[in-house]
Length: 239
Image (cartoon, rainbow, N blue to C red; front, side, top):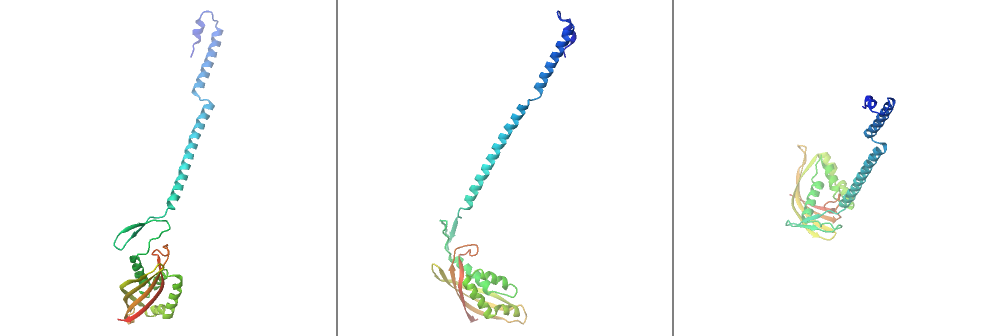
């Protein structure tokens, strides 16, 4: 703060002039101090504008990266899977081509026939419904109708319920007779032991030989093995 006495002692200056000058100087200094302490409006607005530009740039960059990631992910999902075929002797071979499907191997055929025989013929009173449902999913639409007629004609379901039957299946041989481009002829041999949950129920053993024709179909979720049962016939022998 500027003292008034200092100005009053200076020569050539009246008593009133120092007071006026000191007030002007104080006001000028106060205005300068206020201007230096508080930023101007346009400076604050310039900082916000610069920050907005940085945020918009970051947003566009993030959106571009997300779009590019989605495009690459879609291209990767549309790429065909790598199919590796395992031969009977354990050799592995990569099957090339997007539309190429691996041929049905002998191991797959025998495994398919083993499962089908169990679901279609190894039935009991309490699980026959689910077993037959699975067996029908392994058939062609044409053979499904024949199989239903066969079961109704023989009265198998009624016998299972009435006598509370159960079956134990033993397979002794599964052979491939002919492997044509569209069909596969197979023979399945074994025996079935048919009993009952009742203590005094029926009991018998039968030897069978089944002739099964498989139809080659494109592999899919419903036909992962690439084959479906086209026809089935059975010859029974007493053990």
